[in-house]
Image (cartoon, rainbow, N blue to C red):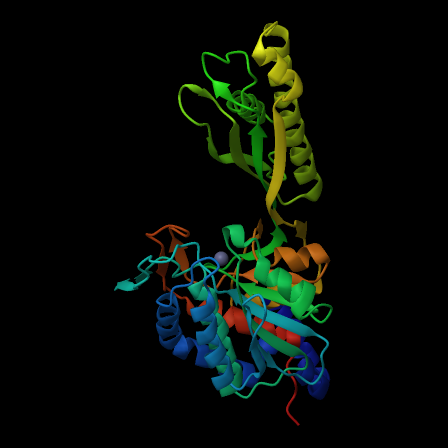
Length: 429
Ligand SMILES: [Zn+2]
């Protein structure tokens, strides 16, 4: 395939040299070759930067120190309009000739680790070890390295590139940073989006959506012996979870459910006043996600009805009956997370651009669905992709997270090529 392509190019070069030169693959152009070589040579410095970034803690909702570090880096790199927005994202603009395309080139600032977690990085052979070292200190370091290469080699782009460190990508952050970017800060202005996230060389072109809820059952509660016969929120919760545990979901598209936390009750000898659980539902397919969501809601409703009817039949007299009549078990389903779903079409130009970048570097990448900052633009129909930053890692989201630096420069080089393929390289006058 590649040799055929080369042959065609050689033929066209011999026929119309001037035109063919302009149409040569972007990665072959001398200035791009120079930038790629520069990034490979700079990789040790990129890894040092990755370590520096990792050692600035960025717990959920406490990304400000790391954001400030990036603000200073963006200013030093000569970006325009450098700012930290109302949500906490750090933003810097590298103007092109036009505003179309406007590519956001981003990585997320936050980690999953609480304040006080030791993020000192240890080096062992090719491994860097610290919580957050891959997810997403790698993406953040790649973003700065690419910016450095563009500046060092004076590469100008046709479109505008906006460098962004986002807040709130992880967990209950619920993509708040990238949401703010698309809904307020840069609403209507972003035409393309790349998130640099984690390690490896796969391509994330699908958005695994999730619905997360806290479900709370309530009733008056009372003495476990004296008020026996009262409806019981914990029993209702048990009925609901039992039904949820038997939900049928498709294997493809992979659709999942998980009750991840439960709490409630007063004491062993009290009929509870309240009980709650938290559930996470996921799928890359909007319809499948809606179906499992509906099935979950039906299970909860049926559980409440069963609990109330059960005691209605058995409690014939006394205060428990009166209380049950006026105060049956009720349920509240509160949404605590919503990540939209979607998929970029296989033949979309943004994925063709990434394929060209992969091909130029000999990268054979799997295309997958995941849950990242790109969920938001993908759900809005804005071309978006998540590119991990090269190398490999294990133990993401765990204290033993570690990053293997072997050939990690490929991730940096691919990120640069993808940026240039999308934003367009401006031919120097
Ligand atoms: Zn991440």
